[in-house]
Structures are given as C-alpha cells and as structure tokens.
Length: 515
Image 1: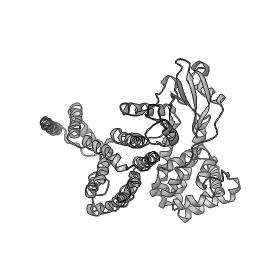
Image 2 (image 1 turned 30 degrees about the vertical axis):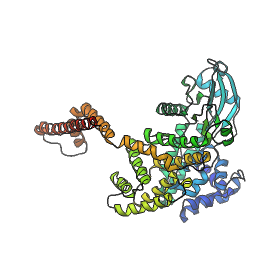
Image 3 (image 1 turned 60 degrees about the vertical axis):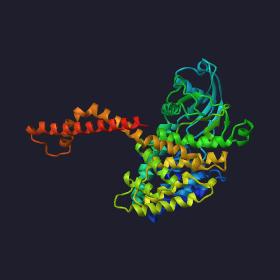
C-alpha cells in the first residue's frame, strides 16, 4: 500500500542522503536529468536535519545506506551487481558494502527457533552459542544436536524483518514510479524492473526453506566435484525462519597466513576456486553468486567449503552454450567467430554489420590479451563485452550481469591466493571441455534424442494443438470437412521430422562406431 508513510520514508531517505553527502554522488552516477534532481532536492533539503548521520568513516553512499537499515543495505548490495544501472564507479563502491548489523539476543533467537520448530530449544540442541555472525536479514549461531552430538550452524531470521522489508520495498516501488513520471528518459534503466528484481531476491532470502532448497540442489550438482564440499542441510531442524546445516570446520579463505600454516597450497587453491566456479556456471548453469572469501573456508583435508546460499545464479542451457563459445572464441582470439555467434543467437540485430562488430570485439580483446598474465581478467572482458554489445543493440540480461559480477569476485579470491595466476590458462581447459561436451557430435546426439522423446510423447496431439492455437489467435478455422486433411498434413510433417531425427541418430551412431 503506497500511502503517506511511504512518502515520509522517502523524505527521510532523501534527508539522509543529503546529510551524508551521498545525494550528489547518486544523482551523478544515474545521470539524473534536471527535473528529477529538482524533485529529489526539494523533498530532501528542508528535512536534512531529520536524516541519519551514519558512520563518518564510511564513504557517503555506503554510509547513507547503512544508516537507513537492512533493506537499504541489501538493495545496495544487489545494485552492485547492476553497473548497467548505477555505473561502474558506484557499483564498485557498493561491492564493499558490509552486510553486518548488531546482533539480536540469544533469548530472541531461541524463541524464534522454538516457535518455528515446535519444540523447546533444549530438546533440540544441547549447546547454543552467542551469535557468530550477524547480517541484515539473519544471524548465525553454533549449536550441537541433542540427537547425535553433531556441531551445526543455525541461521535465524531477525524478528520482524519481513515487516521492515515490506515497508521499505513498498517505498522503493513508489520511488521508481516517481522516477518514471518525472524522468521519462530514465525509463531505459527500467527502474520498476530493478525493484521487482530486488523484491524477488529478498523474498527468497526471507524464506529460509528456499535457501535450504538452493543449498540442496547445489550440493546435488557438485557432489562429484573433487576438492569441494558443502555443509549438509538438516531438514528436520529447518523451517521458514530457521535453517540448520552442518558446521563448516576450516580456515577462512581470506587468511593466507593461516592457510600457509595449515600446509595448504595456495597456488593450487587459487586455480581450484576459479575452475570450480566455471564448471558450476557452465556445466550446471547454477552457481554460487556470492563467492567471496567470507563465504569460503579450507577444510583440514584441503577441500574448499562454501556456505551462505542466499544469492544463487542461474543460466539456461542455450545461453551457457552461447557464452561458452564466445569465451572460447576470445581465448583463441577468433573475433569473427565471436561476432558470428552473437548474430546466430539473435543477441545483435541482423541489420548490423558483422565485420564492424568483429572489429569492435577485437578492440575489446586485444588490449586485455596484451596485458601481463597476472592482470588478465575474464570479468573485465565480460564487462567490456557487454558495453560493446549494448552499443550494437543487445538488451541487458540480468543473469549475465550477475555472472560477470561473480566472475570479478572469484577472480579476486583466486588472485588473493596467487597474485600471479593466469586466468586464461586456468580457465581454458574448463571452457574447452564444456565446448566439446555441449556443442560437438555427442551434444547433437543428445539433443536429437531429447527431441525424439518429446515428439513420441506429444506427436499424436500436435495437429489438434496447432488447430486450437490457430483458432485462439483469431485466424479463420479451416472448414470442418478439411479438418481431416489438415490433421493428415500435419501428421505427415511430424512423420517426416521423426524419420529425419531417426536418420540423424542412425548416422551419428554409425559415425561414433568408427571412433
């Protein structure tokens, strides 16, 4: 409900941005037109004294967002993944926004656990510690199960956090609608879509059952990945506001001295963290999108351990194939092929010049390949690539922006372990293997097999489905006496396709027999 309380919340927001010096930074980053600047300053300046002061040791924008509370902190973090909206400089500042708040009491946490799990805490946990980490949405406690004595991590949502987020998200929607009214030119940034994306992410984080499910799916995908493990979800002790999982023992990945003291090979760890991420993104299309050092440990046996699954990325199979071929083309410095892939995928309008696009891509790739190996960045390459493709008419794709942002973070983690890491050299075998598995003859055979199964299941129904679709679209239906002819014709087409598929399968099987 976008009522007066939302207007007041926006006034306080503007006043805080004015008081902390963040207002001009944000308006400049968004290239805000004069009309919208006037509205923002008119709402904020008279109430500047009402704004929160925040921590004077922080940069202005992070200071303002931190002072305004959990929803603003989370919004800033998500905007850090959208340089297409806030610009590279502001996105870079927002990446260091700390998702930390003072913890709530153990008594409150235990009350939430008891309410969610339907039993007194003492019947479930023999030990329940003070908070070991406290963020904007939840905090974590170390505990021990009564049933088995196993050490576990218990994540508990902040009391009343859903109501607080609902209030602020509602104000964000009001702000986005005002931007669209007073600044039609800003509609290219799709402010309402940005808020809807944020709303969806937050709703997922406010239901810990969804995070548990994400962790479970991620664990199933990576079960056979050597040197990688995830803490197991304890479903019997998890609910909407409580998530219990195995305790991850190990050395924080950001502590190089501790890693060296434990005898782990940092060069090998740097290679592994990068290759694991690329494997998960390309092979599975499902990746941990918040893979910074704070969410990674090195287990005593040398395995990498990941936790905190609130932000996960997803890329469909077709897009994975396209971007693997694009990366492979860059690795081979075959810019013409990279350009052709963009056109074949329909990412760039067909009326643009493929050779001109290839030259623009060369301007992206060559300076990066000319760098010292320790400075080559796949994340930077993707960022430059998005800039070029946008100039040639490609629309922004949120899932790819998230991939690029996570790539930057993972590269940073890898370089913190081994400053001399050659990103391309480490990435090349993963990308090459994915290409051979997903675009070669085996992939064709797999795709044709899937098509044949679908045709076998739905083929007999296709004539009626097509006929019904034509009628729904308002096209004149064929005369009743011709329906049989229509079905016969469609059946013949289906039969022809099936024969073609069978022939292709036979050809490929024979082809494989010679290898």
